[in-house]
Amino acid sequence: MESTTKNIKKETYMRRFLTALLPVFLPVFIYFIFGPLDMIMANSDYIKFHFLDVLWVLLVSALVVTILLALICALTKGKTLSSILAAFTGFGLMSYINGTFLNKHLGTLNGIEPAWEEFASHSVWNYIICAIIFLAPIAISVFTKGNLKKLFVALSGILVGMQLVGLIGSMTAQEKHTEEKAYLSLEDQFELAGEGNVVIFLLDALSNKAIEEMNAAFEGALDGFADFTYYANNNTLYVGTFPSTTYLLTGYEYNFNESYRDFFKNAWNGDRAKLFYETLEDNGYEFNLYDETPYIANPASLMEGKVSNLKVAKTEVTVNYDKMPCLLKLSAYRYMPFALKKYFFMDTSDVNECVTYSNEADTQSAIKLRWNYLTELEKVGLTVDEDDKNRVTLQYLWGAHPPYSVTSQGTYCGSSGGSTLGAQTKGYLKMVETYIEKMKELGLYDSSTIIVMSDHGDLEVGDVNADVQAVFMLKKPNEKHEQIVISKAPISHENFMPTMIELTGGDASLFGETIFEIDENETRERRTYRWMVNSDYPDLKRKYNVMQEYRYTGDRDDLKEQFINGPYEIHPLLDSFY
Image 1 (cartoon, helix red, strand yellow):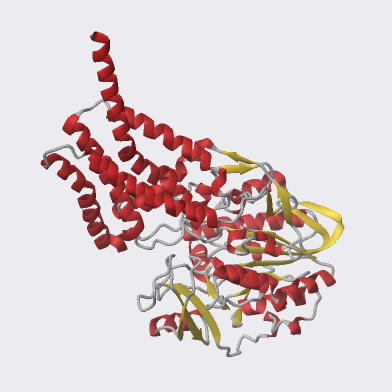
Image 2 (cartoon, helix red, strand yellow; image 1 turned 90 degrees about the vertical axis):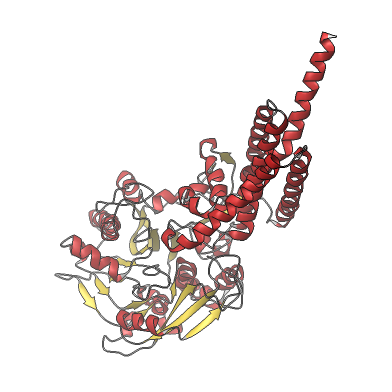
């Protein structure tokens, strides 16, 4: 008799455990499996690893958490258990509805934290709606007679099933996982040729305003660039690393009627790009690029035959288990109520640290490209290959891009910020100055061409006072000044490619005007395109749905006036990179 009673109790506990599984699994599935995998697959332009690299870790984690929570829930009975399962169901339902239907477009996780105060009204209403959805099943459980556990099991099962079908569909459509990866090798990142060096520093988001703030805070901040000519009226064709950097490297203008993936393909396979890199090669130059490929060429293999340090290699993936919570934080950023999202904000680089590779493939050592470049430069130093000549080296740096996480001395002060625009600008220019000093030690400074430039200026989308013009400073071989020369010539990124060809000994006329052909007093109409959200046009999956075109003559103040007057033309997008 005693044995029978024990078996009944055991069966009752087991039944409660089995009943709890689906309601508990619903939020676990959303945050541990569906959320991370869906975000990885939907953002393969930014996230560098394949979903299969982390799939098994997420599945095992979800299974363990689900079983443990269900075992704990099974310790309760009756109405208490019903209310607990209602809470799990409500939380899962709230997360699903909020993440799928109620999210505001917040743009890409590129280090720029949204201005949360601008969403204050939306946050309140979103919080109220989420609270109602979450509390509704609990209220029904508490105030309704009868056993509602089967209802919560059924509802949880339906929601999991719906998402599972979508997830499997996305997995099937995802690009094939392969061991071979194209990547930009960092092997010769700190090496120069024995002669004929053209060194380009591309500092992200560096505007004239950033230079002015730096100069106001740090006297003599540009003294190290006395031999340079500072072109203080340089127009960027596009405001945004994409497509600006791709345009600089290919000369291909963005086609608003094609997808951004087709843009990458057409840009790198276009006649202008082929002619540019063939001309460099004919003149004996190789082109080495040290940048993050998702914003330039996706897939990176599009640069094959043009960029010399592009490599293709087999690689093994190692999961960094201590970094895996980033994927749960990524889910929380998507599914939690809007008012709580700021606590889960992160940078895409944080997500990419979830895995490491057996070689350089897909990592590109982003930390070297951002905050710790100076440390790496001082540790490794510059070397020279005396047998090599004619090398273009383009080094991307974080520049004036938020968050401001570098001090005026070029040291890292925390991923969440802590510096200022002026101080960070000074810090990154100190990195460039250090590189220049090491070139002088090698006896290569005088004979080299050095360019300090930006892909675009300020990123304040919609701000009429934003300075979107991009910095451009140039030192030609053997150029010497007592102090930096300021030029007001109305140049543009459209002049970059022909200028590069002239600097490397080619026929620039095939590509257009060089900056040297443009007089300071010349009147030129120039174009600038800004990513924008425009409610008169259809929403896209990502934040921005149009590019607004502005045309101006004069300088940046004239461009700001055009921002006030409104766009010259609005170009609806087929899809959006951001």
